[in-house]
Structures are given as C-alpha cells and as structure tokens.
Image 1: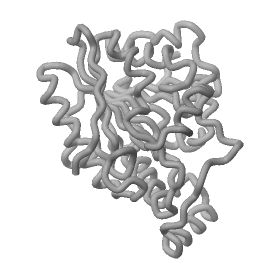
Image 2: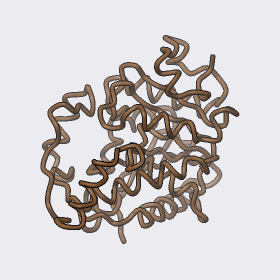
Image 3: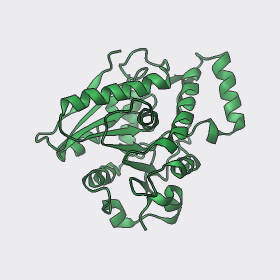
Image 4: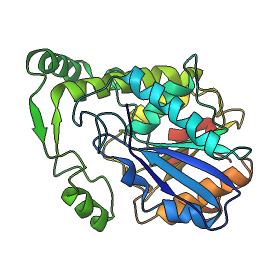
Length: 292
C-alpha cells in the first residue's frame, strides 16, 4: 500500500526525527498544530495516513490491527533511513498510541529510540463492560456496514474550538464510522492493553483529566501493567486541564515542552511539573510513574 506522508522540516535540523501516528477517523494532519513547535527545536516531524483513514487506501474500511502495526514498523524504518545517525521518536495519539503498543511488542518492532503515547486508546472490551461488548459483537456480525454518524454532544475531544471546527469541515476526517470498524478498534485496544505488560522501551505517557473518550479506569489498568514506570524507564504525566487531543488543545505548547524536556533528559523535572505539580487524583492514576 502507498500511504500519504506529510513532513514538517526544521530550518536547522540535527536533534532527531519524529514519526506521528494519528487517531481513529483522523489522518496525518492531526500533527499540524504541534509540528512547528517541534521543528522550532530542531526536530523533523513526519506523519502518514494509516490504512483506512485520510487519503490512504480504502477509507472507512478497517485494515486490521496486524496490518496497522506492521505499517508502523515499515514507516519507522523508512524515516530512520532519511535521518541516519539521529534519534527516532514515535508519537502515537489515541488509536495511534495503541498501534505503537502493538508494534513495539511484536517480534519485529520499529527501530525507535523512544515512544510518546498521548491519550492511548486502551478502552477495550476488558474495561468496557459485558453489556457493551455484547451489543458491539452483535452489531459487528449482523450489520457490519451500518454507519454511525457524528458523536455525542456530551463528549468534548478538545478545548480548541477552532481545531474542532476545522476537523468538522475537513473532508479527509471520517464523519461516519462502520460498526465493524468500531469492532476492530475495540479489538485493537484490547490487544494494546494486553501488550502494555510487555512494553519495555523508554516511553512518556500523556493523559488529560478531562479526557471524555478514554476513561481514567482504562488508563489506570494500563499503567498498572507498564513494566518501566517503577524503574523510571517510562514516565507518566497527567494534565488537569487537558482533553483527549492534547497536541491540539490550548495547552499544546506545555505538552510539547514536556516532550522536548523529557527527550533531552528523561530523569529531569518536566516544565509542567515544576510549574504546578501533579494533583493527588492524577498521581493515583499514573501510579509509580510520577515523581514525588
């Protein structure tokens, strides 16, 4: 498959390369607001439309979690070849983070130096509840092509209204979702949650307390399984004023600042922590990954 690639390149390269994986129903433009903040610091940013999304092949059709994970590994190798000798960081947003959890724990993982998981989509059947799983399985096997249009008025993905309006007008953002695609997404999230226990590379986990899409209980289950939080190999940050789309939220400068600080020194205090610390509720959700 040929997957569309978008790139944002710095005037003075040299820090490293970032490969971004977008979320469900989005595409590579998901990184357009955050990319200039990275390029200003010398990082090249690349993102591609995953299969079934954006201008990629067969939009709206679920490609399968194995294909998505294999694409991430292939794309990482190609981007690594474009930037020889420099660090490669993979950033996944929501579904993209779930794909990275799967890819990184596969027998053939991407050649990445570090991972950033932003609001990882790990709300699978395990944390969904028995009734929700039953209805979804029924629909996926009886009316798989049924389209679900729009979203709930009670769900707010971001506090950036301009970004949300732009997404609503963007023809490459999917507005209708097939039931079998939702079923595939839930299966991916289940697999990502199970993979968390085997996910060992350096990683920064980001989550917003106002996230209406991935419930806190799902993040709590995932962080309890991550093997690197206790050792400091992996780290978590919760933003009390953050929503699901942290890299598009009004606080994206703060989020990117934390990512850049962590990449420069994984053990140092992050700017957001130094400014306000972590509230007790956030610290309990991330657990051992937070600094005292």
